[in-house]
Image (cartoon, rainbow, N blue to C red; front, side, top):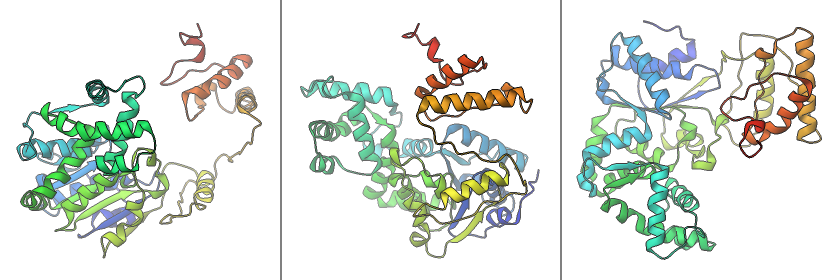
Length: 386
């Protein structure tokens, strides 16, 4: 199986080696490029699948990417290291657990497990879980780990009683988890770095273990994730990162777009390839998007274009409040349906949070517009409303 690629996509796929930064705009085919590059390395360069370390941000994306690589190769790429940062780190740590004081069958705590564990630690130390909610404590500790902030550093910068309690719990959390032979999600990212710092020979081993490191959604990496891939790729420098600084929206959970902005300084000699052709939208939408994002202060810069010219004009409404907005939107949808432009089932309304559905539902009900909420419960079906 072969893929049709545009010149920029093909250049990224066939990049001979060394650091590669693929600046991929929305709808530009970045997943196609990543999968095609992995298949190219295996089929054309003779790289063993087991010597490729490819990171995605969801298990679903990893599964889809593996399936696409298999389709391109005509066979399953056995041994390929492809998965999320957490999954690949766990796979590495299972082999190195003893050096970190864990058994190879250590338990991985999810958020609920971690919060329950923190609640027990709070109670053991005489702190009230009501006054110090485990979820809030966990969020503070998780944010600190994502920034690679140590317990003593968190304690020194604490500016309130909750932060001080979080720092105390953080200090005791590591030993308690080790005693339970358990790691939380954040530990999965930190312990490989601890391993490499305390056992340089293991860092050298894992650096020799992989010939190519590839990272998807690079703009969403946090400090620990970026340090991990940097360390793995330091010797061979075959680090391919794909992302879009204009789509960096996860700063609230530790992602730092500066990793992408500084990549060319961190890896001198980087090849930069821009994927600017969009296969998803019309030019009208892209012109509006380009105009808005151009105002961002710090960005690498690109201009999306498409062969799909024309399209519906973009309307910007400044409403008085949420009800005014909902009434205008309901009227617009009703008009389009009455004019025969498009049926209701061909319309979609996107909003930021489920809490915003109420004024929309009220406006739709008033006008008799049929609707269905996706991934949420209608305001009028909620138990507290009934």
